[in-house]
Image (tube, rainbow, N blue to C red; front, side):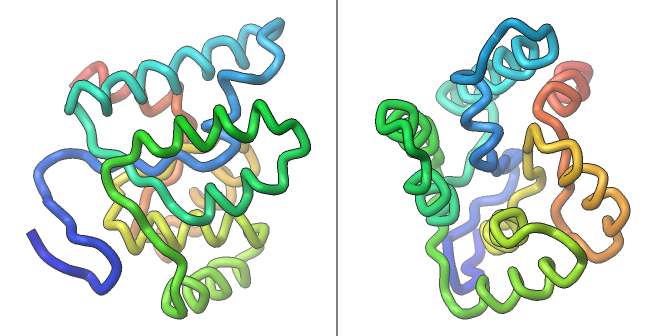
Length: 161
């Protein structure tokens, strides 16, 4: 266990950060196969967290982004799912500075903030259903200590381990 200035980190278990679009996936239109598969993967990951298989992060960035949702019911469901996180990250000056640095790589403001929060929490994995975020993170993987991937792709890999 160590303290990184933001959260107490207990090592040993894989720590996962689910961004807002990932947490939204179960509430998206399920008529497309991909959306349905990703939604199922997100729910399976959250089930794994609740069973203690993985640790997850709940960040203030998810709360802030969720507050912008017009659909109140969806906003509350996403926030409820986010609270399943076993580690809480609050946005402070260090996270804001790191967010700006990540944003300078071409990430959107919220995507950069999610990366900064995941890094501060010591997450091993940031999961998102945003393809452009995954591609950008792969391009800059040498500058990001956290791996960014799609929940379905990651769950398939994790199931093989």
